[in-house]
Image (cartoon, one colour):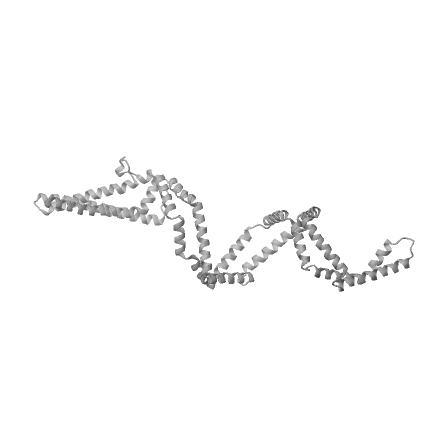
Length: 417
């Protein structure tokens, strides 16, 4: 038998006290009955009335004592049918209790009515609108965030992120998407700044590296050509290259720019429609995903992001905390002032609560039924008696008093009727 809690000890003392009081009423009725019989033998007329009342009071007290006792145990230990009801029928009691809770507390109508009466969104909005409460929510959320990030292992999380990213990228049709994006990019002249940059860099590089052109020309020239011829050809080629690159740089409508536009537009179409180009794009994508530098970048990015978040969460004056606090307070003010938003939130909360209750009502009621069913029979009886036994003793007291009044009334009606 488990040890009682302090609260249960107090309740059990109250039960014992009320049992003593109810028993005292019974003993008082017995005493009055003995007194009435004694006085009646001495010729006292009033003793008949007292005797009738006391006799009925004893019957009422004993009947109610039997009824109350039969709930928890066998009266006087006698195997009387339909006694010790709670110990013998605790499984049925658990099922009835579970059904009662399910029908009266976990119904859709009850949930909606109670939530509407609570006015959750109105209270929440007013609470969050206060700066100290918004700061408290921000502080608690920062603590939870730090705790979550502290528990997560970097290696494990990096592996999960890598697998998730790899799987997501592998499932994306990169060729078609890239083709559509490139087509829109070219149509909006988004590539022009890049072409301008490349043209400027080409002119600068050619002007600064004429020797590279000379080495290339002389390296590819026939062995029999004179050296000065090769150098003159190289200077001429270098000059023409610089002139061509400068023309591309300075003329927005240059033919080379138009050729680049056509090439990119055709390539965008091929990316979106040509099977061979699509296959090449997919191979490039897979090679890029599997490259060790890309995987290392994922890991280092997560570590940097984690450090940044932890640092911001720990600093009460960080931009993250300040913005979060302002956002929470702003949401609270809007929730307190906007009837439409409150109605939407209340509807969401009601729907969510109703879904949970209707979906898991059987599990909730089954928990009650199984918990009561798993209790020891005597333990169940003791639990129930501790909780309601004190009130049940009033039944014995009332039975004694009502029995006395009823007995007296019956006696008077019989005698004078």
